[in-house]
Amino acid sequence: MTISIPARPYPFSFMPGRTALVIIDMQRDFIEKGGFGDALGNDVTRLAAIIPTVADLLELFRRKKWPVIHTREAHLPDLSDCPPSKIARGDAPLKIGEEGAMGRLLVRGEPGNQIVDALKPIMGEVVIDKPGKGMFWNTDIQSILDNKGVTHLVFAGVTTEVCVQTSMREANDRGYECLLIEDATESYFPQFKTAAIEMITAQGGIVGWATPLAELEGAILRELAHA
Ligand code: TIU
Image (cartoon, rainbow, N blue to C red):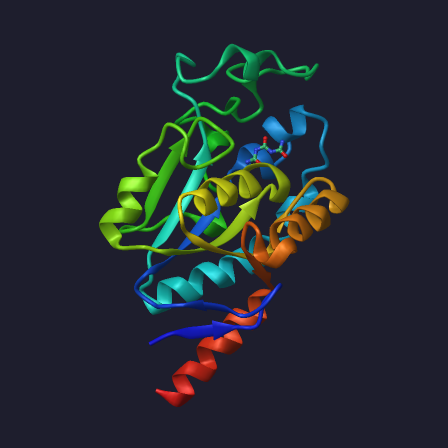
């Protein structure tokens, strides 16, 4: 069975069972005050606004028993997996590994590194700690997807033009068909979100597809009606 979803730049088709949801970095570090995103000078409230939509998308995959993968941007406590260039970049008052209001910034196991309560992973869902912006570099994601037979990825999370776009580009280069749920992703910069989605879908879907959650929900309902 194949499900076809209206999307930009043309309908996205996928087979249930070969499709995983990837929720990128919905962690307190980026979404709450006192975290890494806040230390970089960003207005974090923009990102919190998508939590209900991401929760609906997550619930849809859970109901269907389709695979779910959560990522976190996270470094080892000794920062041995963090390039010095990444720590040094910018003039933030707090750097990666320094103590913030929710523990050490972007460090595994710290309170700020946890996924927000509304989207907490449950048993059976994969959680990937990734040291880069992309989800493939220095992680086990490729073998996890291979073992599950996944060929299609549905993306959500933050931020659109940084970790989401980098992960989609990495996935696209590895042959995955990628759909971004455009109201389940957000940026600190609205113009960058718009531009990232345009870049992803331009040139016949050079990186992948984009569509609102309602189109995915509608396509699944239509499929059930025909089943
Ligand atoms: N700063 C910013 O927009 N994003 C990041 O640093 N990481 C992710 O996007 N997860």
